[in-house]
Amino acid sequence: MRDRMQMTTTPTRQFLFFGLTSFDSLPQREQALAMELAQRGHRVDFIEFPPTVPGRAVGMLQTLQASHERDRGFARPQHPENLFVHTPPTHLTGFRSSYTPALDRLRFRLWFRRRFASLDVSKTIAMVMLPLWWGYLIDGDLLHPRLLIYDICDALEVQGRTQRALVRLRRHEVLLATEADLITYSAHEMRSDIHARFPSRPALLLPNAVRSAFVQRVTCVGSRKQSHERQRIGYIGATHAGWFDLKLMRAVIDAFPQCDIDIVGPVTEEFTRLLPEAKHVYCHGFVHHHDLPALLCRFDVAIIPFLRNEITRVVNPLKLYEYASAGVPVVATDTDELRHYRDQLYLADTREEFLSLLSAALNENDERRRSQRRRFAEENTWAQRADVLLSHIAELTGSS
Image 1 (cartoon, one colour):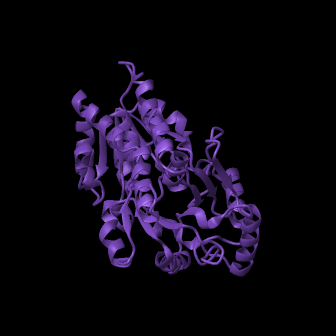
Image 2 (cartoon, rainbow, N blue to C red):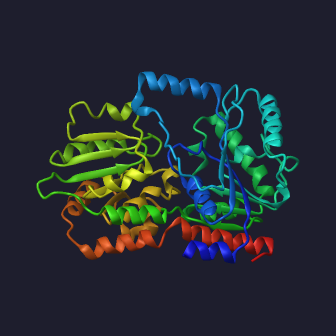
Image 3 (tube, rainbow, N blue to C red):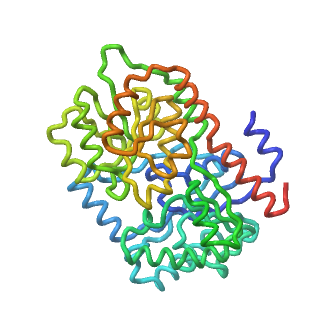
């Protein structure tokens, strides 16, 4: 009923999303926002970042040599009828560090004009998730939307893991920021940096969240744990060395042999070297988002074992909201961003404190705290984030 009311009281808009990923990769905020807006009756055209010949080759190699590292993707057969996903032409070289930029640009622009020939771009709301789009493949000549939004969800170091790519990203971010009508960002700790870098641009904090349907799924699944089962420690996410603390995870594995440990998501070769003798660790690989609630409800404790660096300082983890949906205690590294959620977490300053708090969390028996965490999830949904975003769009465009 609430979504129907939203559709009847706000104008229907046309959104163009220029993605950070392919749509069916590991779920991120861009897919969640696109789904939420489409379900409200807005048309959303989601343009994936271009595939590349090297990327396809690496994917095939990983499939053959290290299937645990491969991003298998998530099939989403039930898109809202007004959500459309588009895959641009394949780049001959890397997207973030291309050696054929003129050719890439020409092929993309020809494709874009053909694909959206009937679209009045001047009436669209364009959301750019990766700054490299602007000035490389798209610009004011090709794209002159009613509103241009630059959405920042992570430190640029996450998107550009080589120095060449990072330099290009920073250069194009400056170009995009000078044109953007609104900058949205995901973490409280980004605020001062964004206001310093883009002092003349309106900026809106839009933290990550969880889908309402996901929260309902977790509630509906409920706890199926049997009294004779071993306790379980769970982690959802990638084990990338840029933000995941491998040494801390090794300590957890060694300190809790009496618990089963679930790793849900892609794991690196470096991580698998921790595992040969760890029979109590289970790597589930990629799990469809629809199937996560059943796993979450088996966790006795969930963990966020982050390194403490410039990347994690501004990470507002999606897993925080997913864990909260199940009400489970969460033990996390004490990062600047996670301190904003200290009421929902056990925050550890050292490895020893992390292990101590993990023991305490495994013994927690407080239904009030579990209910508090579930309320936190219910109060931080993508539906509420969409309300805030649409309200700001209305103010900027002068429409209700």
